[in-house]
Amino acid sequence: MATVLVIDASASVRATLRIVLGHEHEVVVGASLEDAPRDVVPDVVVLGVPRAVRDERSLGKTLAEVAPGVPVLLLHAPHEVDVGALMPPQVVVDFLPKPFDAYGVRSRVRSLMRTLRAPPVSSDLLDAHRRFLEFPFLPHAAAAVVRRIMAADAPIVLLQGESGSGATAVARALHVVAGRRGPFTAIDAARLEGGALDRRLGAIDERAGATLYLAGIDRAAPDAQREILQMLDRRRGVSASSLHVVAEAGGDLGELASTGRFLPELAYAVGTLPVVLTPLRDRSEDVGALAEMLTRELCLRLGLEEPGFSPAALERLREYLWFGNVAELEAVLARTMILHRPRIVEADHLVFLAEDAERAMTAKKPTTASKHPATSDGAPAGDVLGRLDLEVVLGELAHELRNPMVTIKTFAQHLDSVMADPETRARFSALTTDAIGRMDELLETLLDFSRFREPAPQQVDVQAVLDCALAEQADELTRRHVTIERNGVGVGQVSADEAQVLFALRSLCRGLTADVVANTPIKIRGAEPGVLEMLVRTDASIAARLTAWVDASTAESPPLAWALAAALLRRNGGALTVRKGDAGDMLVRVDWTGRAG
Image 1 (cartoon, rainbow, N blue to C red):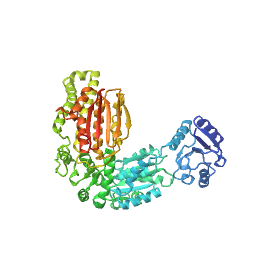
Image 2: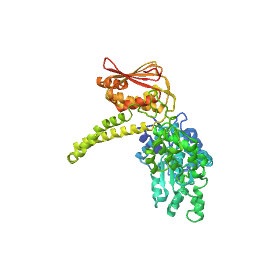
Image 3: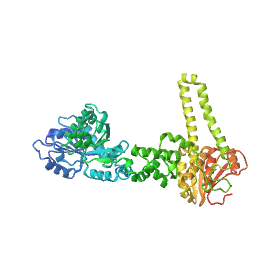
């Protein structure tokens, strides 16, 4: 149970608060801080400052000894006490003037308790935001100013830069990295109307440290500028205020003030130490480092392997005039990564304009013999489907799309009757959604597959990649009561392209999940280093079909997932074999030793 220390000169107040709060907390009371027991460490202090005492600084020293850093509920209005002298700025404080009601006391104390229980900001989250306060996201000069601002915990900050310079990301990073747990509230100053700012501020809970972000302050109307200035003036003498203000301006406020378009007093108030976000076209030497940082973030979000940049690509990025600044650079990199997924970003990969995206998808990539060496069966490695090639794609694509299309066609033919019956409408809607989802997944898989180029070998932990692929099938395996059993010596590491091996094993696991008999295990073992075996119980006809396909004893094409897996494994030095067992089992084997026949 949390402890509340109640300090007030009135015996009635102390008795009342003991009753009101005693049901939820352990309540310790005292007439003054000097009377407070030193062996009790409170979680919250409820304090009534005696009217006869106006030396808050001396009182604050005693409070720091009794309850250092503990949230405080003052039984006063904000203007009645010099809070800055009473406690340091980092202490969370709330106000509840007398007379108060029982509900108000309990509500305020609970709120202060929540600030204690707020989870710490994770190091990953801090790192993710801290990068917006450092080079290369910020120019070196701006990053140096930010360090000074953070050290001083400046209550007012001005971010000055063109549209797209990343001001919003910097403002939010200042809020998070400073450890403020209160809300981050963004307001478009250009749209502020009379009284709107006070209304918004009234809804902000500042007790845990809040940030007010005023975007476009240079475009605020004269009345809005005066309202912002009055708000800042009211808070100027409150050193313990936990509201920080970050203003964003697209132009120089001093220059605007000199022409009469901006209040000089407001320009001085917010522009003490501006953070200048230099246009990206004027810091071309930083573009390469910034592009690599943004690409790292994009790949993390998209689940892609981070690529490198060729010298020609970096030069093209440096030469471009980035009128959209960082926002435009991020959009270009996102389009490039989504459309090409390159291992090395070449100059021709960069998709600068949105209208170029469709052309980038349909553009034919040049291939040469040096980029696509021959495989063991004589087919060029660029022919990723080998001997099945177009027949597999067309046959399986038609097979996979037929059933969903029948569902959608049936829905269209019976639209009138379906729409009239809510039950039937709901059932057909679910079936249609599922059908479209299956087609979308299939086409996305083929698009992903088509983007793979020459493998870039590295040491790949096959077991770790397999675990990742199986995890994606966990829900379906659980639904069918299929378990995973592991044994053997372990596969170890092989030299291959990790992204392509992951795709191959995903396809293989998807095929196994579809074919395995319910309520039976998938037995996985590393037969020896470089060899992965999976034993499953499946339908005899499926096992016979796959075995005949691998042995090239049939012209019948395999399921598409198996064909894609086999093609990528072969490109990466692995051989896929399938053997039908006597007891209805099927043995799937991937061999990187080079001994598979």
